[in-house]
Image (cartoon, rainbow, N blue to C red; front, top):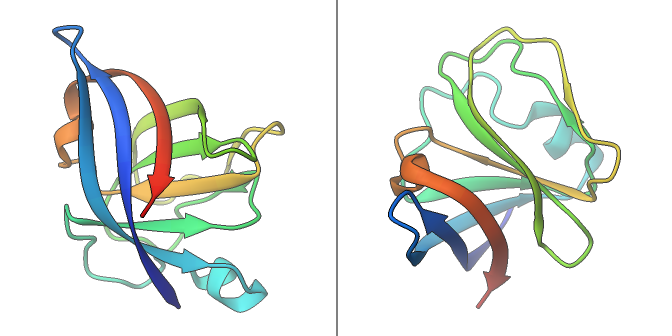
Length: 120
């Protein structure tokens, strides 16, 4: 899988804009999207998985919960789903072009609004 650095911009519970620097693994082939995070032991707080293209996810065969950002074609967040537990069948957003999967322990756990993802 390819890897890039990115910044995720969000509004925290105090109303301040914050950003999170993160390494993003990019799954842009059929089999890398199909496998996703299945079977992995954990996802470090400093990493995320970008599924491209993607409109829905599942957490079958996963061992840990994840947070999910559904992103439009310009990498603006259109939905933020927190703490999806393992063995859930599907979470869908038909307007999404990309899905970013993150560890739920990440600093964005206090986020009330996710704005955008910018690649460096």
